[in-house]
Length: 96
Image 1 (cartoon, rainbow, N blue to C red):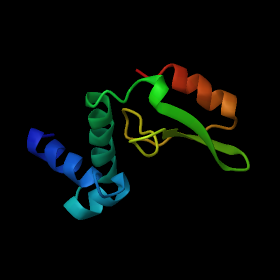
Image 2: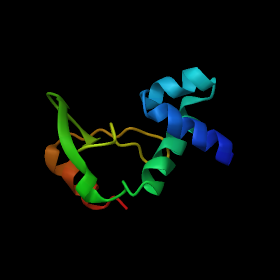
Image 3: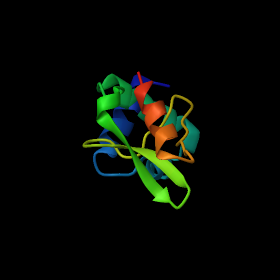
């Protein structure tokens, strides 16, 4: 990953969903999402107070940013799903 690519992705994040950026830049999704995770981390967003559990389906909970970030992306470039709100909140407590 180059610093230039990370800077481009950061700019695109202002107006685009992370999943759209891979299409715009013609780069694999997982590579873009890993970089987005780094951008969140570099921006100080890898602290539990910035994230909250949100129910997205009857039996599915996800983690979303309270203000600036969308859905949480882990270091592997994955979105995470949990069966209960308690499981999602437990994960949030460990975000660093």
